[in-house]
Image 1 (cartoon, rainbow, N blue to C red):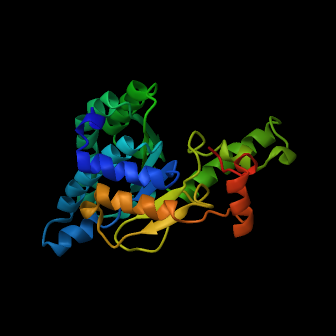
Image 2 (image 1 turned 90 degrees about the horizontal axis):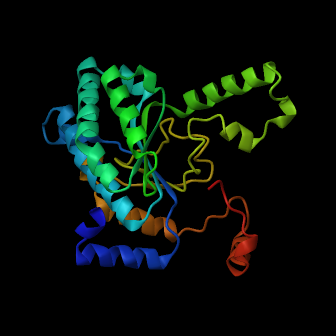
Length: 271
């Protein structure tokens, strides 16, 4: 079990972080910079994606060990289909390889696997693997790892609008019924809490169409490191940064401090 693999030093680091404050419930990661990492080392871009898998393994394991409840990885966007065909095929191969290699290990460690995105556009072999992984792990109660595959935030919002308007037209809903909570229930992320912290590697300063609705009040952490170089110590740094921030959700600092005095009166996001 992963929890038994913690070194004394790593266990101490995690306990120090947890003692500082509340962990983010839901972490989203834009795993950027695989290709540039490879090019900086005069390697084929696919080697960067291959090394990125090692980062995925370490971050998923560390997230589970420290007690993060939800981790969403932006694995392949709808826009990524426009990349060179050789790179797309290589990414699909690596995705299939990861799923075949890791599902048993993830299940053994109580990880629940989910996906969001237009997954029917993925190769049939990957769709089958994903379906089996979701079915196998759906009763697990530890970390929920969501793979965003053939995903974009705009696509998700648009398909939610389409589904919602169909229900309005059929008489199941009236326009007056529509509010934020109802709209959220039509998104592919309906079973996930809003993102508390978004990590983006490679130093880019944009959301890249990732969880646009769910990131309304998410804290953003940018690192210059490329994804293949991002490991658990970098995750801990991001979590510490998150803990040290004041999350106001449109309120004043004074109101937030009063919430700390009267926690039962605090305004909370979707959990």
